Image (cartoon, rainbow, N blue to C red; front, side, top):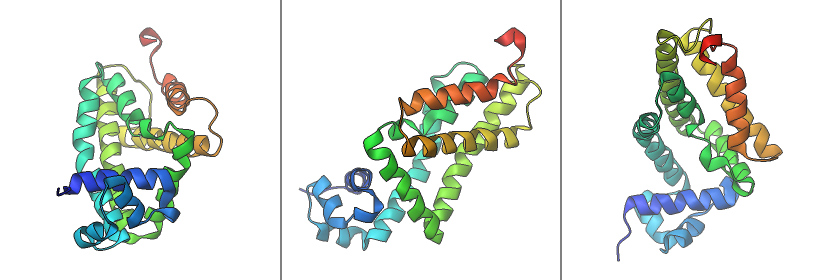
Amino acid sequence: METDDDAMLDAAGRALTLYGPSAFTLARAGEQAGIAAATLVKRFGSKRALLVRLSLRWVGTLEGALAATEVGAGSALQRLRAVALHSYHRFDNPDTAAMQLAALAVDLQDDELRELLHRGWGIVRAHLARHAADAVAAGELAGCPPPEQLARILFAAMEGGCLAWSVHPDGSLMTRLAADLDAVLAAWIPEENR
């Protein structure tokens, strides 16, 4: 039976989440996929190449994933909240959050992986900026920074909150991030909309 690329990438993602980047190996990714490490070598070439493919796939799926998140939200402000919180559901597990964030250190040390991270984060910030502009136009936000700056602020608050929680995972990450997001946005929600 032949394993397709998506199944192998899913398995590699599980192995990376379970073991973290320092203990991640092609053998462990192969175990998760039920295939030999040699199959991954033949298909992807190396551990680094596999990590690049994982990042490429993540960037390639972001637009669709964010669009699906936005469909379920009603107002522009609700879409803004949904996008701000979208990426963090997979981190809401103390056993794996630190492993997933450790992969960030690997991305930051590799030019190609860092560029892919930049592209992915840029997609998220563009969605945040669009919904922030829509929320201002709809009167749901007032007196806030320009949409691009607000997008950076919200993105930084969510990333920072996720990092802090991974060091000391007290309670639910999603509950904490949602409360922090609402506290930040509250300063710009007109009284009549509260």
